Image (cartoon, rainbow, N blue to C red; front, side):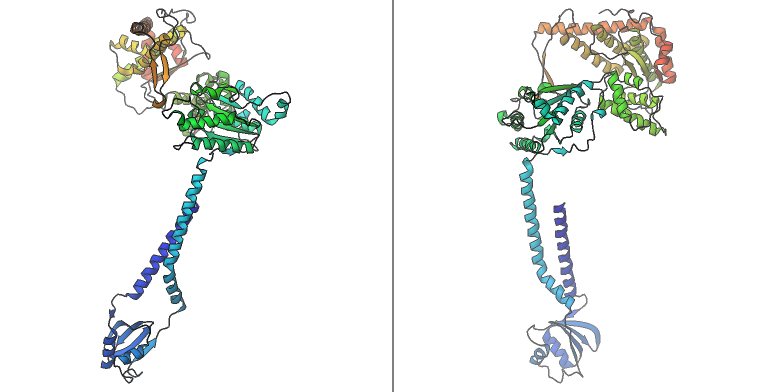
Length: 618
C-alpha cells in the first residue's frame, strides 16, 4: 500500500512538471504573433508608425497605428529600453509621450512564484524519484529478510469458533484428542505422575473426513494459540528457506506456549528421504531434517504440541512417525450410518428443515459419504429448495441432492432418439433386475433413464447396513450386477453397444483385485501377485513390479477372464429367468423415465429366496 502511494506521488509530480512546461511554452510562443529585431523596432519608431510599447521584463509587445497586429521583440536584459533605442539612433523627441507610449509591466507575485517553481521543479522531481527508488530498494531488502520467516497464521484461543460439538461422526477420535486438550489445560496434573506431554498427533484419514476441523476443535477446546500452516508453504525454490521457516515457526510457538502447531498436508514435506533427485541437498529433505530436530531435539521442555494431517501416511518418513515425534496416530475413518446422521444434524443447524425429513433415511442412502460430502449434500438440498421457491427444505430436496452429488445434475435437455432411449431403458432395467435377484447384492433404491453427468441413465443400490468387509460372494454379486446392463442388451436386441464401457472397466478392475490382491482365485491360491509402487515424480502414477513368471501371468489373465465370464453368464441366466419383469420395468421407464424403490418392487418383488435363494456359482 505504501509503495502504491509513493508511485501516486511520483505521477503527480510528473504531471505538474508537464503542465508547467506547457504553460510557459504557450505563454512565450503565442500563435499569430510576429517577432521582430530590436533594430527594426528602432526604424519603425523613427518612421512614426509605432503607437505603444509594453515592456514585460525583456519581452516587448509593440502596437502600430496602421494595424491592430501586435508584434513582439526582445531587448537586452541588462540595459533599459530607452537607452538601447537611443543607442540605435532614436532621438528623445521621437520617444516623447506625444508620439509614443512606453509602459513597463511589473511581474505579479503569482508569476514570480510560478517562475521560481519552474526553476526548482526539475530538482524536486529528481529528488522525489531518488527517494522513491531508495524506498523501493529498502522494501525489497525487507522482503528478502522476511523470506525465511514462517508464514503460519496464528489464531487466538480466547474466542473459539470450532469446538468438539461442531465435530460429529468421529467419537473415538474425539476421545483420543480430549487427552491432548487436558495436557494443554492442566499439564502439571500429568507431570506430577511422571507422564510426558505428547509431542505430536498425526491425524490420518481420507480426504473430507474432518482432519482440519478436528485440529481447530482441539485448539478451541484448549483455549491456546493455534498456528496453522500447510506443508507446501515450507518448501521454496531456494535451499535453506524451508528450514529457516521451520525454525521461525517453532520459535513463535515457544514464545506463546502452551500452543498448538497444525501442519496440514504434511506429506508435502515429510516424504521418505532419499527419494528426491537432489540427494541429501534436496530442499524438501533439508526442511524435513529441521522439522525432525525441532520436534525432538535438545530443547524438550516446551509445551508445544504438533498436530499434522495427511491422507498418505504410507509415504511419510519413518523418523517422523516414531514415538517422541508423533506419539499418537488418530484415524478419522469414513463415518457409519449413525455418524452420518450426527453429521447431518450438525450441518442442518440454522437451516429451515421440514420436521418430516427423515435424517436416518438420508444417512442410510449415503454409504461411503464423508463429512465434506454430507456438508455438500445439505448445501445442494438448500439450493434446490431455493430454486423451487420453498421456505423450508423437504425430503425430496435431500434425495435429489444425493443423486446430484453422486452422478451430477440432470440433463433433461439432452435429446435422445427413441431407439437409444429404449436401449438405455433395458440397460438400466437389466442392472436393477439382476441386483434385486441376487441374495448378497445391495437393495435397489432408484432406477432412471434421465441423463446425469456423463451417464445416459443410472441405477442406485445401497446396502441395508454398513460393511467393513466384503465376502467373495458379495464381490461376485457386484460383478454380476454391473454386467446386467450388457447382458440385457444382448438378450433383448441381440446386439451390444458402448453404453457398458464404464461397467466393463469397473468389473475388470474388481476381478483383477480379487485375483492379484485378495487371493480369491482357487487356482492361484491365497497370494498377492505384483508389488505396487508410487512413482514420486509422476504424481499418482502407480507402477507394478512383477514378481512372478510369465506362466503365472497367463494364469492370472485366465483367472480374471474366467471370473468375468462366469459373472456375465450368470447375469444372462437371471435375466432370462425374469424376462417378464425386465420388459415391464423397461416399459415403465420409457413411460415415466424414473422409478423409485416402491414402484420398482411393485413390478418385481424381492424373490422369496433372496436371503439364500438364487445360488451364485463361482
